[in-house]
Length: 225
Image (cartoon, rainbow, N blue to C red; front, side, top):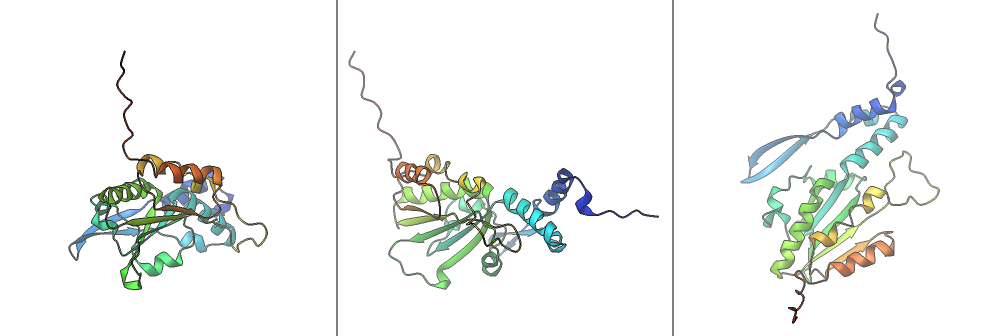
């Protein structure tokens, strides 16, 4: 006779291994469709619907380890850049992207002084591992200088519990703030960056200053001695 056991009776470390296998292992299939590369990801999420306790625990793991980023491109496409063509998003379905609430960051690319319309918007669901490539694409566009690209990075608190707590405001998670320090090393001479959300000023102000500095620093004058 088979002895049944409760999943929650397993040690937390074992449960995390299961969450990682179910929620963080992305199976990718590439196919040519309309002359471009499309990525399909198959990721079973039925464990999220098992119970409230399992939802809270597994959803928190899903968010912490995948670190989803919503990239919204308005009147511009990240696919136009050499690096952007190699970014394989989780999905480009606007309905699915807008329905998801667990983004560590929402990033908006737009062209200055150009009216937006729904037809000119393209949405991508990315992972944090794509973040350096997004910054490099932004830097590449900045080097071209035209048209003028603006970039807004919005960090909003994430609630991974259900139902969401109605007490104190949820602070930003450490892994959200960890997205910011790499920005100055990959983005240069770019005065059109904005950071929104409850980001501490001691963190945001130096970044906004650093990205406006010239791409190439002036070499020191030759020594006369």
